[in-house]
Length: 227
Image (tube, rainbow, N blue to C red; front, side, top):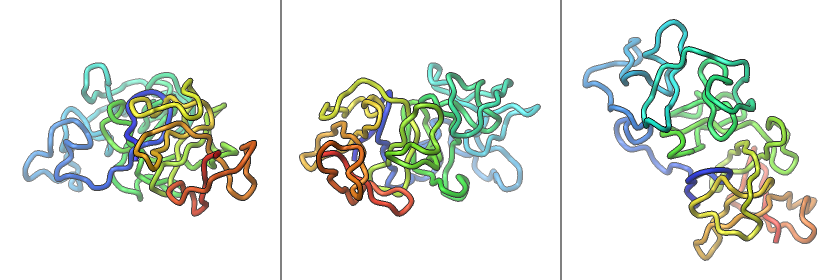
């Protein structure tokens, strides 16, 4: 399945977690003998998932330019899955990734109802993020004009703004850059291309046939791409 690089769509699903947290967080592995359940923050300067290590109500966020975690003093009013332009637009415990306030995670229960810990925005965020509780095709649950895109190979989706790569365009290194309503989908020939997401039951929004895809499932409903 496609691995995202930069810009707008399908998100690579981590098949397995390696030992330690460095693989996901991009920061130091836990200190031997430390116990996060005992209230000890095991990453320095702070932990993206547990939001510990910061003081005074600050939020642990990721500085992509510096390649390190940092404590953010200012919180905005945009909730999780809300639209944003920068970290400080987002409420405590979330950060702005591809114009949506997102929560870093390690396991599904951390994400809550209607969401799973699957979205991988690496290298924009060196941790998995919770998916958005949204509906493909109708885009219900996404902020503004964002589109709800299913993650290939898992029961989840996420909200992103549309970009410029048209239907049929190769998106191997630009998985977030498909036009609005399209997903960067790995075809049977192994090439990642942008395809409009559709509802096989109604063919919407295709002008022709909606080709059902068993690996595009959200909330137990199978979606497809326009043929």
